[in-house]
Amino acid sequence: MTQVFEVSGMHCGGCASRVQRAATALAPGATVTLDPPRLTLPDGAKLDAEAINKALAEFGDYSAKPLAG
Image (cartoon, rainbow, N blue to C red; front, top):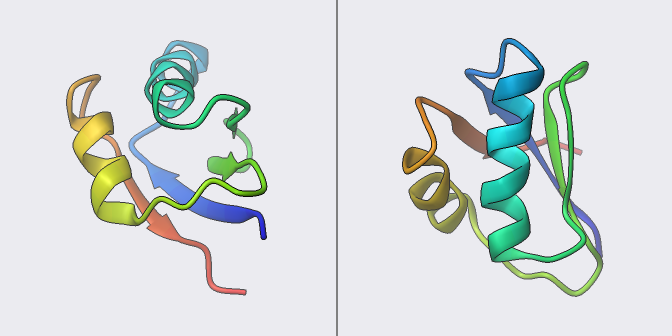
């Protein structure tokens, strides 16, 4: 099942690029979009918001939360 997270703190392409690097390190195949600010993990990747936020903290002031759906 695909997991989607809303990412706060992304304001430009550079932000999205940093979040993409962090996400790809955790789950190859992860995708990041700026508008809307989302991080989508590939099928089979099982990560929680805590693990993602720990990785994002190394790249800037970004925060991910599961998208309600």
